[in-house]
Image (cartoon, rainbow, N blue to C red; front, side, top):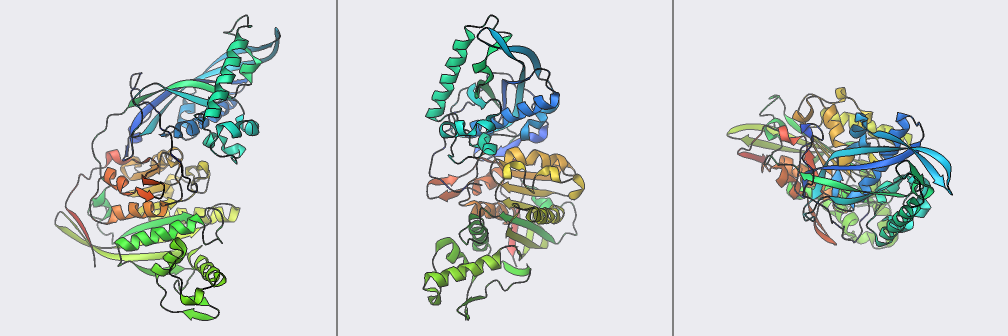
Length: 529
């Protein structure tokens, strides 16, 4: 997650293929998006490694370079699937060729040039240019060690850390384009002095920062609209004894849990506000640790009649404070109590409903188990978050996480879980964080009992900014339980939010695992009771 910024994202990318279709991955990679279309992407590139380097070193060099493609592609409105290039690297089909590094007519180093082909599933934003191939510049070598050299010209964040350069890399910036051109000209000029350019390279080539290649994008034929498996979600298919639809909704902290203006708390309360506006019948039935959520005090006197609307106005709008909170100090004290009540605490909501599907009727209860708090930053916070996620994976019908992606290495990272952490039944998952398409969905689908037959995963192809994310997550939950029977494409479109600087904001959301869903629509109605 990132805090909001006022900017337009450049989207100059290709959508017409110049190479024939190829089999990228399994059929479960088929995705549906309201903001983009599915493509296959393919490009060739190379890395330099020490002469005779191990296959492990080669994999790491390729992985490091491919990771920089995420920044370069998101600049163009493209998200890719293969986490850390794992499936590409598993093929091991790169090629080595020895090269000598020559300076002043003398061999000063001996390397291997390793060429490789990258193939993947991509989501390409609507409204992009219709040409292919597309020029793609990647970072070369150990670019993290050259952070200070790269950041001023070639990133979108002057404070970018070395270990996140790949994410902030923006080769389309005018200063960066000039640097790329200067480096290319220097390498080409140095090549003129080589006796055998096929087996020799210059020091300028060895020390390059950039590799420019071309990527072919080939559209994937769609298969029409798909639906969430509403019949299984509501117990009309599968286990007919089910009496609840259980939703787990987690919100992480942005920076400081003690700050009532932290984006995590704000979006947690925006999620709550959006849900209650659609379902005013929702009631809190449990808190753990126990708390009287609406009991507030100012100077030792209880504030009477506080509602959830009041709390949300205090935090989200900065309005609606009681007369006793006229001073800044009193307001700060009140907001500190909000943080204490709503952080690091399970808050469970229930909504009894009657569900009708094609004339069959069931009484059900929607139970929404929410939690806002730290899920990383210390070993203890990470462990507690992992325990919460394990509980949710087993009990949830609908799962939602909104917060930082931790670049795919936080407590939600798939490699920390196993198949037996999930039940054999249909579940729906949302990972509402930056680039979650690359980090999470296919791993969880492969891990889940029944694979794509039992799991649909909603992810973001591009950066996801904090503002409005709570509303988007609430709309995801609402779309699954409101009885309107939306298709997946309609549900994803309903998650768009209007922000002060952009209308219908959508971080290129997509759902994976849905192509095998059997539910094909029906007369669905959900009525609170």
